[in-house]
Image 1 (cartoon, rainbow, N blue to C red):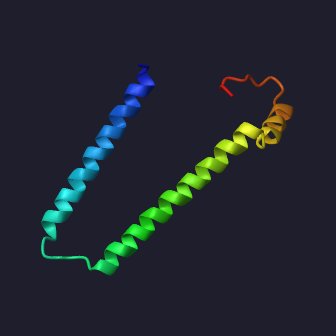
Image 2 (image 1 turned 60 degrees about the horizontal axis):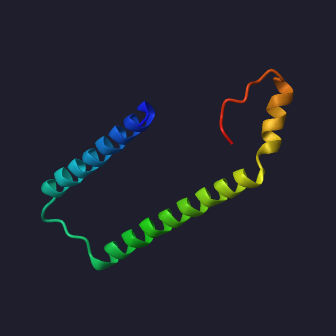
Length: 90
């Protein structure tokens, strides 16, 4: 496992733990507050819509990259700086 992967996993774990702690503190501060069924429905619609939009945008990004739709931008940058090295993997 590379150092970058390990650091990413640690950062993700810290983020999850911090989120859970935040939710627990928030739940203890407002114990008498309740959300109606309409509120839960709106929350579910918002989360679902956000996940769908994120998935669609990610899919478009991956498909565009695989089909080479962003190659024109790469060629322009190479014309400006012809000595540019290609360090990233395709």
